[in-house]
Length: 88
Image (cartoon, rainbow, N blue to C red; front, top):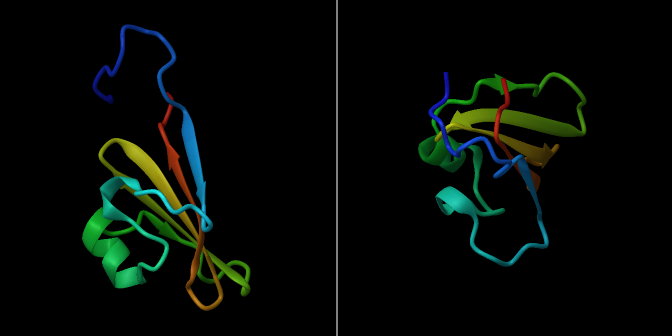
């Protein structure tokens, strides 16, 4: 089970950050990160659908009790990052 983060009130569900964002991102992530840097910052990905659609790649990480999903194009440029609080 995940540790209790609140007294039952809705706190956080999902954050979506697009490539145009200029603010700092959690865990020192940035949209210029290469796969090696993502793994150094977030650990080994849980899922990599590199063989899915050829024009994009989606990496899923579990880090600090969050599901972090990285959406990349075929050149491995990051387009979108989702931070998701898993619910049971």
